[in-house]
Length: 352
Image (cartoon, rainbow, N blue to C red; front, side, top):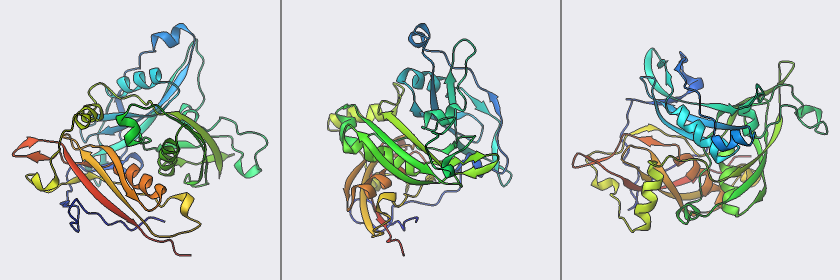
């Protein structure tokens, strides 16, 4: 169900002016030939107000680690509260690993970890599963096929994308989504149960469809599982995050450079293809979406915006994929710059 994707930039160019790049490629952790080992993992600082009130919590943090084993970027994927998300982020950004390798060559990789905050010797079983909505023990009223003794363990979990207009306006939002994972750890069903605005429900649903898990098991046998995640769209960002800087520039009418202004064509370091939305599989029709985004001066994609889409789900799928891309930092006259890009995506019809 992977879509065929075509890309353009602004004036209808047939390709995204992307030059191939084999340097500093980034791989998911599970695709490495030789997995890295943690060398240094400073413990997080327990939020003072939470400790004082006896509150425990957990956060799931995604890490981008370079070929030298240093954390180059970290982001909070889910959290039981913003205070725990902030503390987990500040800790994880200081971690260090032995290099991961691919075909004998050190490479960058993406990994993630759950960080739990506990008091008086207590602990959270499977904090990673807890924060993405899988209980340690499934409800007894579920069919036997969904019963497990080990919950699904998250392996790939892109951060939910904050809807663009709401982000600019600093509008808070919430969404609750139920979903099912099959015996291979693939998300097979997603249902928005509640949202403060449909855009928040669509954003969380699209992110979950890109998640992948080590499957649940019962006596060592893979099982299906169902979970529910309730998310407040207030995931922690550090004060120096490019999203915060770019938001202020956009609000003040800043014009960004375009691809044609750059010294060299864009060079991708990491790209993810969008998923065909599960909600549209029964129709299986082709679709289109146009996404506008900024590549910041460090090469990270920021602030994806859905310009148009034949179905909202196509737009959110494309925007969620784009939010995970990274490029060689763009330059204009030798200086690192932010560049605005617009790219259409074509989703092929699903054959039945």
